[in-house]
Length: 183
Image (cartoon, rainbow, N blue to C red; front, side, top):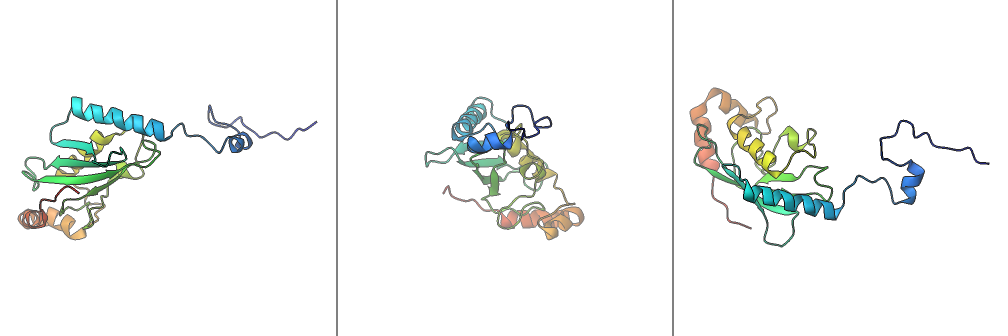
């Protein structure tokens, strides 16, 4: 008689012991390409039927759902007022359990965005949860335009100017911004 048993008492509900999970092709997170596609289709419908002011996003014309283009309008009473920014969203196969990769395609001068368009925002990194969606990310980014996190800048010069010289900051925002074509 074999008494070698794996301790499963402290395992998460619904999880399998590692020896059983290995037989089934590894641990299962409850997500696959079909559920990612379904989630993105649901989010697209939400964006189309209940749009938030100043933000939009649509899948790229390549026919896939894992690559989107988004726009954010600069919030009023900020240096970005009247400007429109294009962003790219690349969704991983395990979305929404992992965050999308989001980049500014429109050149932007901002404390939390580097010159390659990479964004420093906690919900796109370690604070991501599956409860977030495309619209919440866009609204968070729109909010970040008016309230940067200068304690964690990717662009130190922009953070310093934001705090010390708003006029010069606005000049740099306007000189950096340019309209980009759809790719």
